[in-house]
Length: 561
Ligand code: BGC
Image (tube, rainbow, N blue to C red):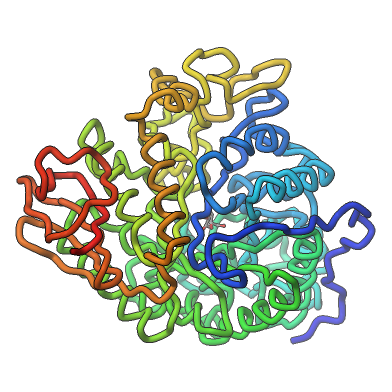
């Protein structure tokens, strides 16, 4: 159904004269394909730096700390949502796609940020959330008010419920779909009303109604959103839950045998519908109307062979390779996952886009065992990641070797905790900038320092950026060295966009990935030292104790002799 109402975001009146920020960057890779070699740093704005002392990170704080990001040697940043939002899901519930939430600052702040980043040679990617909006979004509010059968409701999935008995019409959700955050994926539009007995679909929290992408007005609306940010000069977009925009026609029940533990992945009816690819073809055409072309990177949480279809030549440029995120410290499993990604690359052409951490995932230090061993493995894993063929994304704090924090139950705010008993708060704790506890360990630089939105644990200052900058043995110093060498190897032609990824599990749980006959990445994932293949070690996560041998939980980049 095509709704006659206008779904265009009203943005023109807000575009300031100084809006477009020219991109003058010298990319490490081929001019038009800078993203193929790029390392992007994910900024979670509420936890990065707080410029006004209210305990929540903001754009002013980020502007102030941009030189730090540039000093890492990354190519750009991806910022998670800062648009107006009730913050039910920390900004992934957007009520105005073309604004800035006052919690984070103003549009003028964003324009300063963009110009400042570009001046430092950093690209800026934003998050776009096209699967759902906030229940406070004016179009959803209008749909609620307009009532059943209205064109306004056609922008979302409003459906009559099932009935447990003739006396209780529509008292049950329309189908058996589960929310990713736990419980049914449906809420009553107007609880208690006898005339409005419709339910609306939300794959996440009740505050995040899903758009109905079968209605062409939704596609038109998002074209406007993309144009708004591209016109401003942003370099690209990370697409949230990119595989889920279309739901199976008619919204049938999921097969009863589907487990309900992990909503999206286990329900084939809410994910990876063929129609979604047309959206990304359209967005790619739009992105290529700009100079330089704007980048599209998708959160496509599917198995490699399916995810790779989203990066066919006329769709997105990148989709995160999440394969290793689901694995422990297990060489056989990594070799298998790596080989599957390589098969997908050979089939569809785009190299994997590596990520080991983000704001939804338990930090690697903790995932790989915690303590000193977890910290060693996290560093070795990051070394491997940066040596692999393809682009890489690192998450703020990963360069510091931060562990997951066990946030006290009473302080947890993630909606997943309330609905599903799992919290992602532990990877979102504000960064420690200074050892000195003043100003929330330097996180808050404003006139006052309100306690941060998530409490900092004892000893957090031991990870401080300021101290790590002084210590050549720190996680931070290691990350900066790896990034600098990676850049150099791209510049001198050792690394190329055509490199392959031939994965092998070798004796003693030595995992290797050969990106060309001349270059190999090796990670020792067993419990004994292992002999390395012949070659010159260009880089190691930790100093080698014996030439030609790799100690457990160390990784190297090797030039083959
Ligand atoms: C984001 C999450 C968010 C969810 C719903 C995800 O993929 O990364 O943080 O809760 O989408 O928008």
